[in-house]
Length: 228
Image (cartoon, rainbow, N blue to C red; front, side, top):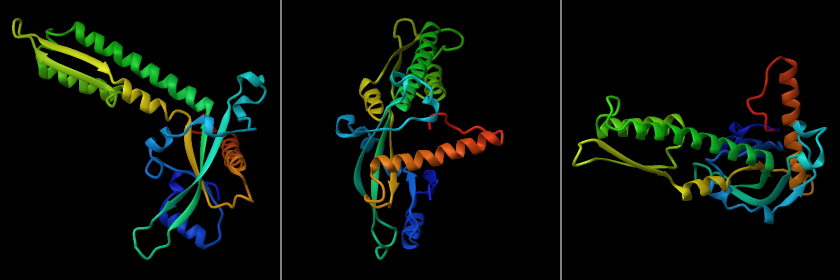
């Protein structure tokens, strides 16, 4: 069985293992944290001979590159008497996903920067006459542009003019921590290594995803992500 991240729960995996059902599914960040993904290094991974559907027909130098590395993950159930599940965890890195993530982050940072620059120009105007109004606008920008985790802003009031003040920057350490996860995700499986090595696990997963995309396309529905 090949599923999405909703397939991964202790109850589901335990039932499939007990029933002798082989599975492959991506792990959400609830099971594999961003910190764990950030700790992966391409230099410790193996390149996989795989071509994504979107890259077919492209010159070799323009195709996405895939790498995998493997370790073991255990899941403990909510009850002490429940079995400890031992799974193969396949870390996957996609250069196309990494580039897409970097591009998306750069765009939202640029847009947030433009919003903050406009806010700075409007300090003390009828729109932002007080420190609280400025603080509220910063909160709105962070939420709308999805940059709250990186944005550090300090507001105040000028003692001479009574106008609000603002200084801000994007936290470089937070940006680097997120960038370290770009392109990485993890697949969980109970397939034995002699049935499929890490590269073959990726190919099995991608083959199913590609089949799902083809089915949706034939029915007039597009998948939620083009980066399969």
